[in-house]
Length: 620
Image (cartoon, rainbow, N blue to C red; front, side, top):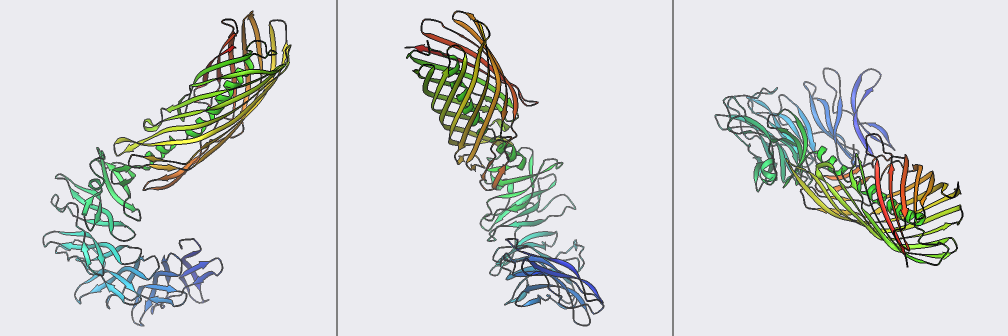
């Protein structure tokens, strides 16, 4: 397929009404499926072609086709363009004719593969490089085996195989037979037009009697300057398979040595390398324990070794930040609402100016961690008309989220202002409280993960904002002089924004895109108030709450050296029961003190949410 997905190539059946065959095709939306033909039908009957490779823009297709000279039949690599049609790439030698394409440059101008070569005595498979100007060029061999260990189809004492090609086709990587006259082995090579075929070596040449040394390249950087793969190594007891990384300046190193001694590899062996970033700075492959029993994927870079499962859990520990910030806003609205509803501050019909202060703390433990939510509020309120009161003040909030993956911890501060307006008919009837908040968020975020066998932390500073409003309306119905009942309904909205931020420190820091979450909640319930003494009252309420959004904000961003990520937000509880119990009294003339406990049911498996609040108002 082309890079943009607009061109597809493959193989399809074809027929002329007499013979049936398989034929390579090229497909576009505008032109449909186009058969590419064959180089030649076989003398002894039959024909076929298939497409294997395509240039990035889809204009060049490379594959394999039947061919014949009228006497012998063979399979031959081909190059196809819309202007030139299908062109055979040839073979390295007559005799056993065969060529096979395996790699191609980005623009399709250079092709690498292997073909049968011969010296008149021996036949072997040899890597080739083809261009339209120079034709097919054999890349040679590192050495000829003296023991004939390779059991190939075309002789058993030599071969070379191309496996990789740089984006511009100037560098080819592969493996070849080699020998020192005593031992034979397969060895990774790097070929350039200026330097020819260069062996990359092996991590450990000798081992126990009968062991075979090897190195096989699997991945190459875009410019061909870095090659990685797997090699044998001998630790003095056993021959081990280990991932290697090669550069012209540093030669072949194990990936374990390349990432450095700062990474704890206790009990870990890096088995192979099967992916490399375009610049060669990040390698991925499989790792195993020292016993070689279990294989898991890894990413590696200088100073870092990370498993995908570890990364997923670590990024997942960032999911609670936005919903916790949103819940902080909802808690600030609740505090202002409680002050508006339960702090009379003397006679509401008077013009008394009052100071108020409140403090609260709560805990919420669920699958997204444990949250402690201390908060404080202080300000002034005044009567603005009979039955009406207006208040405003400063809000100080903090949420600490811990018990996350690998002991990650986040501290979110939300400081700002809030205001409320309330109305209450003096002898029962309508009661209304409306509160608004505006918070600036500041977050210290520590995302932890396993770097090798040890925990490492990437740190970040986040910022954002909370805007919210809540309204509650009820109708107070006195039962007698000591008892009243008030059904009520409330609705709230909190809009949370977390700005884009980036981490520092650690081997795999990440950047996170902006997050937005809007939470809308409603409540239907009833509150009962009982006067216990002249200056002491008790209230209790029960309500059913509904949240309109069912998922928290997801997270997206990019991990340095690995690439972008996107994780869906966690499922949210949408319905719950909520209850509150409170006591209010006057400790001295002109003062009003209240204490309350609020609890709400949680999703199955989670702990109920519990929050306590104390508030004091003093008339001036």
